[in-house]
Length: 241
Image 1 (cartoon, rainbow, N blue to C red):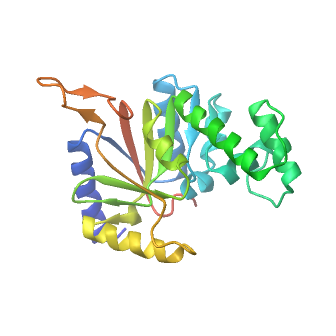
Image 2: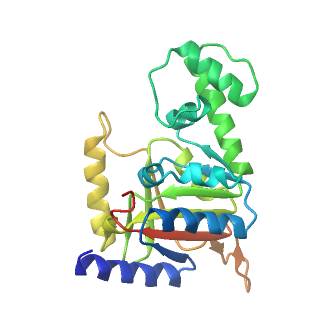
Image 3: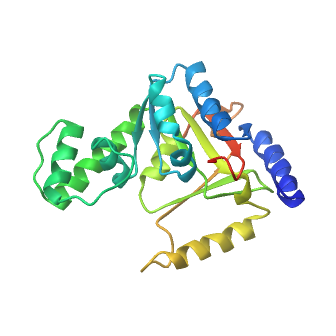
């Protein structure tokens, strides 16, 4: 880790902590898995929803939690279908095969109609986010000067996982820290250019600190519009090794 990265990390930790987030550090894959598992076990978490995450896939986070008796549901549509099929990666499937898998997943026989299947999948995944005890995300990058997480996605599940469960855990690759909001905006523009046929990404979620509101005079309430607890796990670049 370079001196510049270390400096950004320390600044990010300080600002995120000041905003009410609990920040953890993980030096390797085992520490990352165990950190998330410990948080879940300490709070008696039984149901987890997870957004698409490169780090989580590399370290086998879902399998680690499931081995400990904690249910984990993928909310990325392709990854959820792969999970329903008992696989770790997405494979080419016919519409009839997808219909059968989603029907089994929601307990309702569905027609092999893409619109019907998509609507049913979105309803089921939305309800899973409502029912979950914990949401797990990975930030595409994070802003050191404000302690802000930036989570990007083309499906609404990325935002639902971040705001609906009572507890939210976000993994951040230390190499994906940027100094300022302007640097984050430049990254967003770069990501948008890589998305075919899009001028801007569909969902960009900024999270700074634990969710509170001071709308009622003389009182600050937690979990007004989001999780009661916000945790960040800073992971090193080679965590998947």
